[in-house]
Image (tube, rainbow, N blue to C red):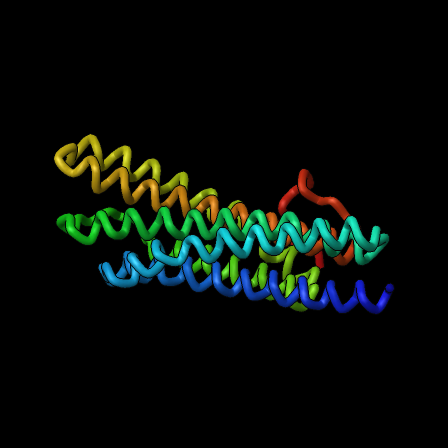
Length: 222
């Protein structure tokens, strides 16, 4: 039975990695659609949401089946529990990518206005966190997971900066309130994606080291 369990776990790992790469691709396309004002790319993200939802259901069912059939312990149990949680985080990231694509689709048809905020830098930071959290999962790399987690405060600060700037711009330019609020919403979506990437990193640390660090300071441990 042990070899059967290991085969099932290997298959489960392939599925969660596939889901991670698919979600990562959707976040990338959603942000590129905004930067390049590409309606076709935004619509492709919206159309692909159902696939991510189905993947989440399949992976959750697989995890529950393994728990019921094999009653795993130790490393195997931690892996399955971690995959259950990571699966949920990835599905939420997929939803957030859809939210960004929806706002991108709206902004494409609106006049471009200048906001003194480097949205591209925030996008790159968040996408890097998500990519490296998935790499940490693939390679069970605890050090990379800690690095991802340590960057969450930086993204939080970016989102607060965006909020302050939009608040200031609204006072000066109320005519473009909807455009400004849509940009603020994108910033908030990016901040939440960073939160989920940090959650994935925490689950990798639990998977490998059996440590629950969810409420501990977000500092890097060498």
